[in-house]
Length: 102
Image (cartoon, rainbow, N blue to C red; front, top):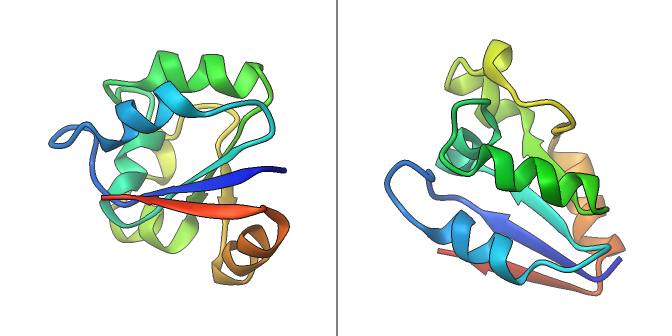
C-alpha cells in the first residue's frame, strides 16, 4: 500500500475529503476520523465518488468509536471498513506514508 490519507473534517462543512479524493491512487487508503466520519454515511456529499474509488481498489476505513459517538452506525455507506485504534496504528505501519488533511 502507498499512502494512508486521514480526514478529520466533515464533508458538510469542509472540502478536505473532496480534495483528498482527487489525488488518491490505487492502493491508497482513506481513514475517516473525528467529524470526518460523516463522509462515511450514504447521504454524504461525496458518497458516490467515495464508492467509485472503493470499486477502483482504494480502501476506506472509519474509526468505530467516532461513528458510535455520532450515532451513525445505521447510516453507513457500503464497503466502509470499521476499525478501532489498534487497526488505526496498524494502518499507519502498513502504508508507506500518512497524509493528514485538515
